[in-house]
Length: 413
Image (tube, rainbow, N blue to C red; front, side):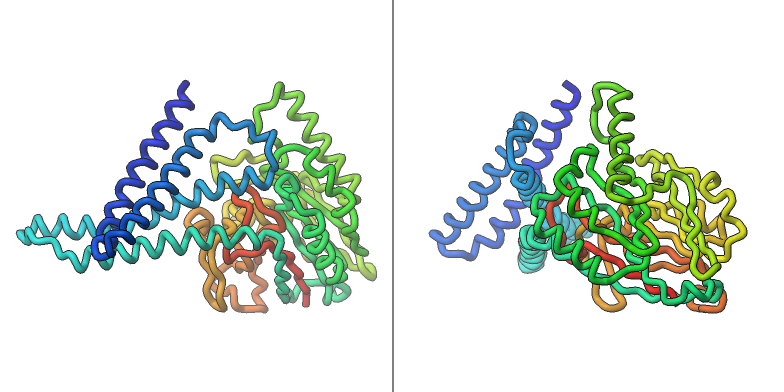
């Protein structure tokens, strides 16, 4: 009952957004010919009522009977309609606030041209955002290879030139195109990596989501091995299980999946890699987050124990908030931390020197390479580094806008 009440509160809010948005459309439409205006208003309300009906019907739909991708697109389009209107409404609200202040200061005449400008900007912003979300559906398998060169003075000589492929957030439960995923695997293999590291979220919730993709991901091989960790989605925390035993059984099954893929799953432990009698360490921990809404299972103290004496250390930790919260504070000899988790929110833009996504307001570090300390640009000081993979897969919104799925190639020098 409580959940149903909450859903109807959302519906009422969306209706208010619709009505508020329409006020701006009326202003723009005032200068249109009568027939054009009627067509524009009719189309607007037809689409709005259709979308609203979709929201009302949503809790009663039996999604398991529908195509997985169709379901995700259906929800994304509904959400996109109202998110776009909400963004547009922000511009309308700014104009109304300005008009209110103007009235309070004694100017009782509202400037129509100014209102027209704000309304036009709001409508353009809303329309552009919605079209971008639709366009993003085609980018979910458009894998982009990011090549990054890292230099460390303390890296043992035999490991110089090491090529490491880092992937994260596969989310196999979202895939519907096996051939497209295979192209991503082919891109990884084309890099001829010495080592492959995967930083969690193999599935959305259930181990069986990997069933149809075992033959694809089992192709990932490297001379120095493939190592993996768990992410927040791997524990099944977002499902209502019949019992705790069922949930634990699913996790054990997922661990077995890693084994069958030929991946060494690191559960709060480390492994030593050797080349020409020189050694480095790869540390892998279970999910650890500084964000309260994500359960932490990781134990870096346990994983680190015994690794102290090695000259170079790589940490795999799914959630990048771990880096600033614990690694930089207490483990200053961990040279490189690899994370994922954020997906770059699957929405944003990146141009040389500038990158932006809404997720930056939640995570200080959210995509690409970060360096610690004021002297981060100094190679000799060997600043600790964090690299955040933008995710191989997707979840929720079945698309990507500006932030493409990533294959990271790290070259050590």
